[in-house]
Image (cartoon, protein in one colour):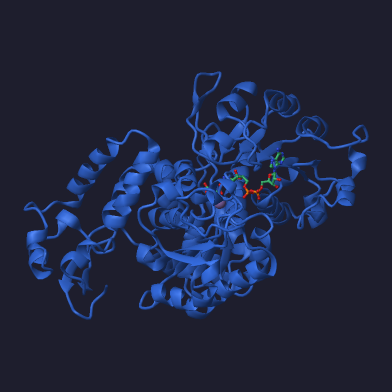
Length: 565
Ligand SMILES: NC(=O)c1ccc[n+]([C@@H]2O[C@H](COP(=O)([O-])OP(=O)(O)OC[C@H]3O[C@@H](n4cnc5c(N)ncnc54)[C@H](O)[C@@H]3O)[C@@H](O)[C@H]2O)c1
Ligand SMILES: O=C(O)C[C@H](O)C(=O)O
Ligand SMILES: [Mn+2]
């Protein structure tokens, strides 16, 4: 746990009480109350952080639905960061699903109706001319390490929401990765929305125009990225929930010029690789032994495919061509195969994975999931389609018919979009499936009466550590090797490694310690390959990463007119 520091603060009276960074509410000491002009502004009793957490928890429990709990916590965050993060840290397993997936999906789809207070930086297309001014107004005098941006085109599986997500993702960096919240900047890139419901909503808070596309869009994004590069050269720039036509393209454009990370591509790839490494450990096979179906060949599906292929090539010393041949990708028009080319139905980036039609001599048109499962006899079935219930009983049983321990990862979020409920996947395979899901699900009962814990294969289990490792090592780029090192470290912490009946991934309850290890692995790799701008020994890396972490404890304050604001 972090220890107390003495901080010089320049805010007094109402100003310090309304600063979520410095506010302590009833926990201001008598001495501080005098020094900061708070005597008449607070009730008598000086509370401890424990007492404040108990009080906040009592109030939280009074809200029955998760969305109401989410709103309450949102308000708490706007009042007092230490209390907010402290309360969350004490009830991690219970509260992550309230502030993040799946409840966050509901909060974002009601963003304009639940809106109370702005958060972070809003860069809106019609204000492109003042972008630098607006950007500088928020970063000047601050030490920003992390920028989390989204254009909200593909929020989880719920699609175009116009605005939202950056701040929820930034919170996870602090909660799990220990990144100081005052060093994070959530950015909303508002380039319009094609969501009719939002366009027709009189309370919509975003820019109510259709999405800007093409050259104008690219120039807007580029202007923003260049500002980050110019003014925050050592920051990590995290991209979240961009649409499928932009996610990989923007990552490829910028990843060699700045420490850029796309969570849906790379974070999802990394956490899924860790889960798969744990699963093949249980089945005592190798990555290259697998036949893998990816259902939903969009941003996440392709990100996972590339990450698994890369790991397969390195771990099992096989060529790219051979590794590519282990994958069958399905999208809206069925299996991605040669004959789709003529109709221009194959998206950029999928070329290596296009299957020959000759593999399916009996099908003239589209090859659907059931037929593919029967033909390919997969060992791994991954869902990133947003198509809830796509893995039907027939599909799962067809997979089980040819595979003793099917590896089934229905990763679409939020919970209602899961390709198969893990309870069904477990029942239909007589408890033999190795399962991980994108959203949290309760444990299931195996035929032997034992509980099987469903691993939550969500990128939040790894991106805070990947980001922390990148930030502490002040890396110039986020390389594939750094991500692989993080995924391998996560896999090495899988509970299934010690007990094959246990979960494939660590529990979110343990995510802070797990992500510390991930961060260390990432920073070590950055130093080893020379992308870092620091040069430390392994022991030093561990110390530096730990020392950089922020903890939700109150510092002691002294008033100083030149102090922090
Ligand atoms: N678990 C995680 O950490 C994680 C990470 C990223 C994304 N996801 C989830 O994965 C899903 C996809 O996200 P994305 O960003 O890749 O979106 P995306 O829109 O880029 O990709 C979805 C793909 O699925 C395809 N698709 C839609 N319906 C289909 C169907 N009936 N059959 C086959 N393919 C179909 C689409 O054409 C698209 O290519 C979302 O639900 C998201 O929440 C989970
Ligand atoms: O946000 C999440 O829960 C994971 C992932 O980034 C997603 O888009 O679904
Ligand atoms: Mn996402």
